Length: 231
Ligand code: PD2
Ligand code: ZN
Image (cartoon, rainbow, N blue to C red; front, side, top):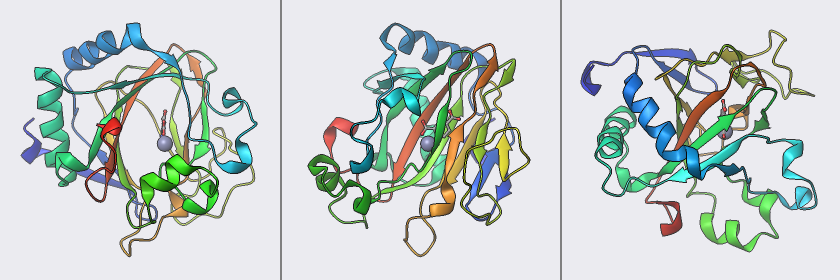
């Protein structure tokens, strides 16, 4: 369907999580993105908070990733347009695609997609990036690029104004579980309408139980993205 005809279903109001009802990316384009990223996939890195600097990344993120830039790729240019129309923020506010692959039992523990400056006080790079908290990731357009036989949901443990959970638990009926599906897109917001970071946007990728999961992050800032290496 053309972007203008897509339907959004509200999955949660606090935090804001919306699902595109129709298939957002055609099967052959999900395959294309996977095959383009596949040979380049490497162990995921995360921006570590000061308190976590000595921890092993694998303790909370076990997927592999690759940042994919659009360049002159016709399929990605078309997808960029589609995302821009969907999110109604200009492309200069969009990061590259971060393609993710999870194999069986791989997961990504709960986290926020925003950069909280107080948690990165000793991290010069991140501090420089966000300058002040006013410039940050506003929303995530999250793209599911493969079918998953079992598991691999995206979990929002604080959906519907829930409390901070003590542990991440994908089995329990806490918050919101979004099942993956090939070509599916969801949008969730990391900032509240008043411009504050939304702590309730906490989310994670549940372990893949059977099969593998391909997906991609498209992070949308609330301003031109501060550094060219993010393009
Ligand atoms: O894999 C996921 O479902 C997921 C969901 C939300 C991954 C991320 N965020 C992420 O990589 O930030
Ligand atoms: Zn995330």
